[in-house]
Length: 204
Ligand SMILES: [Zn+2]
Image (tube, rainbow, N blue to C red; front, side, top):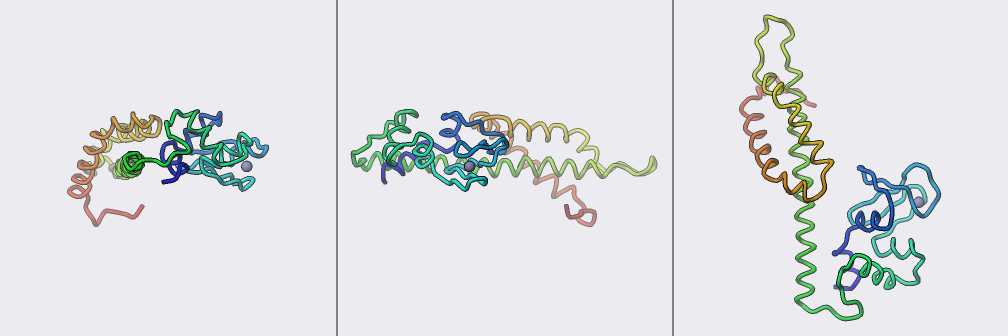
């Protein structure tokens, strides 16, 4: 593993962008530091920066090099190593144990990202299920209440709250919701299968 790979696996683009003063909004957009603009047209991805305005595209190394007008990528690697206390020995071939450690860290990061995507889908699906069921309100006073409608009366707010909480909190906060997400997932599976009359189901 090269020193650049080590750096890239140790620190993500958002951390670097924010650490160097960029204001990244909730959708991952920010003002591009490489051209003048008033509305954000640069997107921060997990491991790269891309500006839809000027076309600049870089990973953490390239971004740092350009941001601080450094001569070589290795200078950027050194700066990141210092600024983010990555403790990577630059200029020395990493030992096997070190490589394993970096890979473990990268795997852990990827596993978290996978879970995060899945968790968001679960919460979002649950929210939309509640929205759909809210639409099953009786059309007239004589019509019997659908139990899915009643359920949604009690749970739509909660579903929305969970989504907002997930969006607004940081990684630790999301991880602390792991049990809740698992419960919602099991619950949503059960009720949507057992309560949904397929003949009533309409495509969203
Ligand atoms: Zn730009």
